[in-house]
Length: 118
Image (cartoon, rainbow, N blue to C red; front, side, top):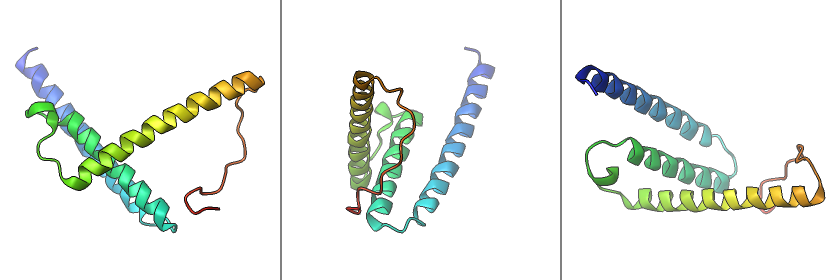
């Protein structure tokens, strides 16, 4: 890769990093408007976990982009990864159930917030 190509790639990474930061800040501010405190807490925890994962992916230099992880970042990252894995398992189970029933998986009525016990 030529020096020019490296410079252009670096600019592109910096531009992407800036876009991710601004969007995560926007989502975090939107989460402040959620009335359910548990939902707001879980949402912010997941946003922090996703932001840390992207920070690791976009980091340059140090081993695996880890640097120094703060305790809340580690907790958020592990919780977010666990939630994503659980979501993937749920989607697989729903797809198997819909195939077994012969349904096409069309939209259904959304359920109420499960965190509030409703």
